[in-house]
Length: 279
Length: 335
Image (cartoon, rainbow over all chains, first blue to last red; front, top):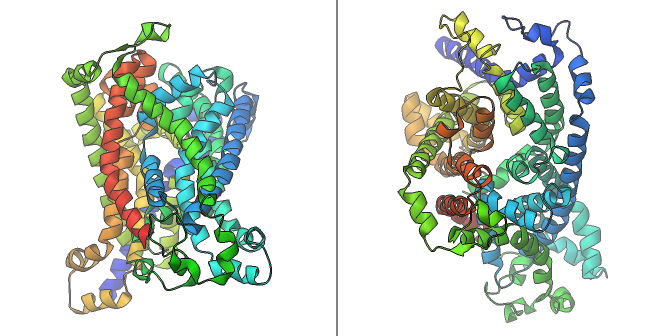
């Protein structure tokens, strides 16, 4: 008994240690974002942000690139979320409420497309966008993002729609509602959590995306936040970097994501591993 | 495992309605039982197709067309001259012959596969051990570990990369300070300058990012194992490793194989991490993986023909590897 308790405390210590190691980069970002550059440039790192300030955050807003990049990122992200929700909702409805010819192939195609790597397509997407004049254009990027996000969103929403019993709609129809009315008044409200989760998923994907943006948003004024952040990484190769400011910028990019992520995480992973985990 | 797979196909009114054979697009006699559905059913032939139309339109427009263009271009001479207006010339398999006879592609392909497999197996191994650890410790400690995992998982890729570049920075990075503190003189050492250490850093970053998903998924799988099974195993005096190998492993095998497969697919496409580490001081020509190589061919050298050919190779590999995963998801769907 005694040895079992010793073992458990050892395991607990190990778990805490691993938790600290894993969270360290996130902590380091926050810590550095609060410290002045003079402190960050000293030979010994400072592990606690005592005496720190929000000056780095002020510097981010003062940087000419941040607000335009924020505007591009917000526009593209929100447009992607809106377009994805409408399109994927209709698609999910079709595959979970109807049986139709080609339904299986449609789902199969969605699942396969969802696995395609952006890197295997971006040269062609660049070429296509340049030929229709949508390079460096938020509309062009939104279309590419929507196409990238829709397949998994249909798959995810399908689960939500299927989880709402058709009997509820049928009961409404027995009470005299038309099919559309029954759907809008009964099923749609029940779908709200699914739509929120899917919207957050689309938000995360579009907000974080780097690869496609790198190829089709080449001009400075068309940069999204990840591309703007990349500028600092590039600069750090050749000269001293104001890491405090870069960490403050990264924090600003990461905060909304971490909040949203915690909302949607459970739903997303159960969609990915399918029925292998009951969820 | 899933209760849904065992559900008899005609157990609910909804299933009756949908029990008609897959390929029938007209309402079959089987669906004639529910009176409430008689009215709306007439429209149902066209309605579902109308509903999937937007999905199909955006996918064909933004993915299908580029794939088709890419297939066509991979058979064409499409270099800088063509970008300035010269019509592309059909050259058959010349691009493919060129890339496959060039040792560069084989080097990069081998490197990508090696990097992918090392990262994927390391991720699943560490994730599995952490899942077992979560099972072993008390609720509070487990929550601490889970929150820490979630934080790492939630970090946006590029933000995480800026932090890692700062951590491994050769001038003032915390890594070199730590190594020097424990006795390895690493001050001023640039880990990104050498391909070997470049990939070691890249692998650490990729594993750090990927482990949370695996650990939490496998932990969810472990919680599905009935306590009695584990207790019985403990009573039979099965030692720790035996218990894992003979009892836990077979029970979590479905989740395990799916997360491993997903890791392999995802780690084959590491682009952002490699690209940003190259930006931060890596020697690009010696550190390309498939994604950055395509980027270099297409955007860097403007050789769209070769870039398309390599892209097609990459897409084919992905589809081949994904097939099993997609099929396993489809099996669940068919239930």
